Length: 201
Image 1 (cartoon, rainbow, N blue to C red):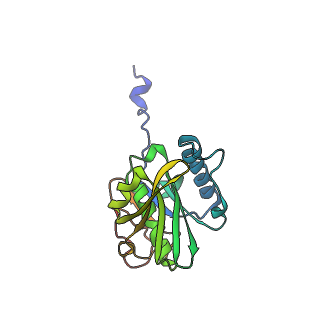
Image 2: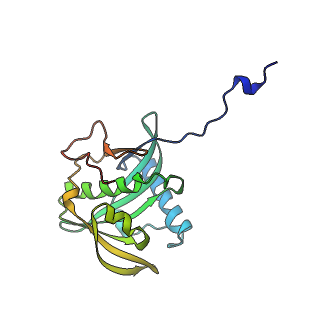
Image 3: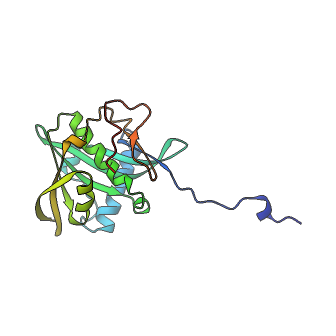
């Protein structure tokens, strides 16, 4: 006599192996990005109460990393925002990766890569960020250098800048980059622009 286990395969938990990193293009992508930021900065880290959004969000560009199923975006698992503070001077901030995907070390690096390369495509000649001190080593591996130290919201931060020579402009914000588990990021099949496939990992 057969039992059901002989007929039905056991459930296998799905683990995404492909991620699309691009500028948020749809409402659900923006909504999930803001929800992720609240989960990280309000609930997990307790830096803000209720919501982390501020005036910068009114004009910032929101970038997202999304897990894909069958090549289609399914869930926002990482985000960062960029904005131009003065002509040619851009800032990156609110870098967050979903806790369940932090073992995918390439996601944060690819978000950083897209942040700087998108700014460069829009005339950036200086890019800056305030980085939580525990993440300084990651940024240094990605060709960033530290320019100062400061306290923000009661937490130690460092002010950092990237070497822009390692960040060629990305002119296609919607195609962005495809990042695969355990592999360097590369331009999506419809991506354009010289050097956009250079890995920062």
